[in-house]
Length: 385
Image (cartoon, rainbow, N blue to C red; front, side, top):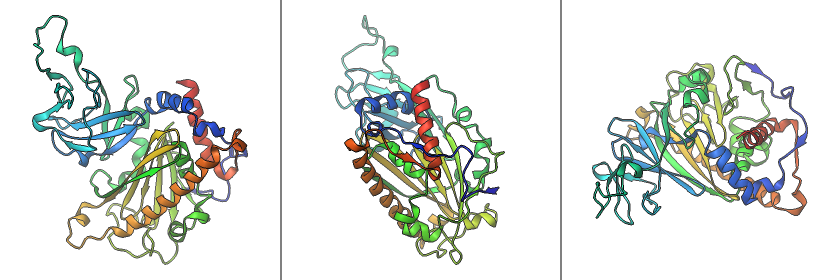
C-alpha cells in the first residue's frame, strides 16, 4: 500500500470538463445508451432478491426494461421486458413471482417459459399453423451472471464474459475479506435525482466536495488525511477502479454518524482494515463502500438526459440480521444523509450545465483527476464503439 494524498498521479492536470450539452442533449444521451450502457456489464442487484425459481425483478435503463429471473437450474436469466407479439411490456412491477414458471403477457396472454424465454402458448394459434413457428418468437435474452452475491447483466450479445471484463478473480482479490457473497440485504433505498447520470458518477469520483457538503462523512473519515491506495500489483481494468481506503477519525470505532460500535466487525478483516472504509468504483454506474461492519452499494441508472435513479443496498452479516435486537439504522442514516447531500449538489450542477454560459464546459483541477479519468472513459467508449 502507498499513500499519495496531497499529491496526484503524474497525469493529473488542469483540463476542461466535457461540454455542458453532454449532460442534457437528447442525441448525445441516446448515443451513450447505445455505445456505453447497452455494451457493458451493469450491477443489477443481489442474488437474494430472486432466491427461488420463478422469482423475478426488473431493471430499467432509460427506455429499456429487463426481466431478471431465477431458473429451475438455479441460474440467473435475463430478458427484454417486451412481448414478441405486439411489443407490450410484460412485467409492470419491480419484483414478483411467475406462477408455475410462466411469464404471461397482460395484453393478449402470450405465455413464455421463465427459464428459457421460449414461447409456450399463443392463444387461438396452433403450433402447426402455416407461417407461424413458436421457436421464432422466444423472448430476446441478454447476458446475466452472478459474482460475489451480485447480479450483473449485459445487453451486448458479443460482449466478453464478466470474468474477462472485470479480470476476475485477480481484480477482486482484495475484497474477498468482506465475504460479500454471504452478506444479506438489511435495507434498500431508491433515490430519484434530477441530474444526468454522469454528474452522479463525477461526484463519486472525487472528495474535493466532502469537506463542503458532507459533515457526517468528514467527521467519520476526515477527507484531508492520507488516503491508502491499492497496491499497483492489484489490477484495474477499463471498468474496475480501485479507489483505496480512508481511515477513521481517532476516537471513532465505526463509519457512522456517532462513531459508536453497534455490530462486530466482519470476521475475516485484518486488524488494520477494521479502522478503514474501502471503495470500489465500477464504470459506468456503480460504487461499493466497504466498512468494517456493513457494505453500502449505489447503482446508478439513467432515466432521461437530465434524470437518474439510484438503487441503494445496505449489506450486513446475516448473523447480525437474525438477532431480535439487530440494529442497523446507524449505517442507513449515515449513507442516506450522504447520498441526499450528493444528489442535491448534482441537481445544482445539472441546472448550471444547462446554462448558455456553460456551453463549453468548466475546469477540472488536478484534485479532480478521477473525474478526468471517467470523462476519458466515456469519450473513449463513444469513439470506439
